[in-house]
Length: 136
Length: 372
Image 1 (tube, rainbow over the protein chains, first blue to last red):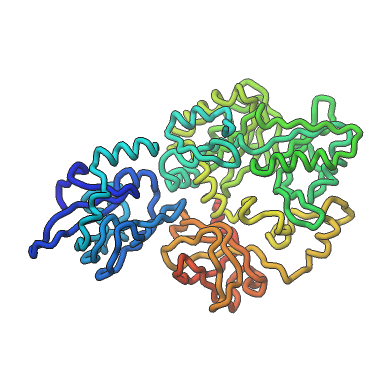
Image 2: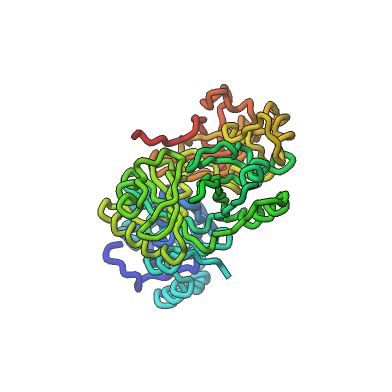
């Protein structure tokens, strides 16, 4: 996950990003995180709850929480599949959400089980447009 | 259509994230709430609080009239004195918490300012009109004609002194004065809602931007700056101050809320005074208290407070305390869960944070007390 540009990613309308790759066995692996826009909107992050490895998640399902001083927000899994890895170090380094939202601040890796759901994701241009409409 | 304070366009032009607060379009934050909070604790924060209701009450009947409205004595207040008080219904439920200011005009006659919560401005105005006995009492709602700016923090007085004719450093806590502010008319008071020293300024609406700009320029030199409603909320919560609509409401009486000091019943009659005499010793009602949480999850309004499996109360305000760097909560619990000194009784309580029971350690309010 080095030098990932937002244009390489897909985005959920709920502000999670997805980076698709294949593992050694040829399985499709989605690395997910939350967008710079979401991080800027949340501000003052204080707590992150990650999903458990091995959990089966459906696209659109809440699979974690992120808290700011002001409020708690659900993290919605942008793809369907099995959680195969989590970024356990992130909870103690929440500033990485600000510093490197598309790299160091990845949240989880999901082995994708249902590729049909991927077509609901937005490319970066469409996502930027959505953000502009939501406004800051 | 949301109401705008005279500083609204400044907020919008300076990154203010604007939200509907009691019908006003207000900045919740300009950047980081924690940064604004910390700046207020360590230097100075400037808050536009023009949305708060400001009523002027004058005439020879003003003091006796207010004395029959609020929970503390108004007659006998010194010129310049300010009192925190409540307005209660006949059953003792809290209609609002207010500040009563007593001033004296040029001819030596007393007049009063009442500062009320934005969310209760219409309700209290109607309440005042409904209880006006006639005679020599004039009421004026000055809210939209004026602006109110809170300057809070250890550097607050330093940045206010150059623009006020009255020396704020010589005002006692909870005293105010009419004063020229930046050359125009105004009111300055040693009051606030953050747990810091500081003052609040009331100026005519057309003068607000000039005063604000001067304060911003001065605050910047101390690494202070504007602060939004988000920081105002975390600051008052750390300071253990109740907020109407959260810790205070019509279904809550002042004694439950820990505001006995703001109720003077001796020889007084006002709506609720008879009920409050009985409620004073009623130990069956839940009481306000504060907790520090052991975990990192943040308690929020409405979450249940438990003793074992039994729900004994609920959270009315919760946040991550930027100063203590831990989650904190205020709420109401049954009285046996709180010991006399506010420290934890035998009851080990927990708060249900979205299905997770987090241990809550009772602490005496406030969570934060300034050292100087």
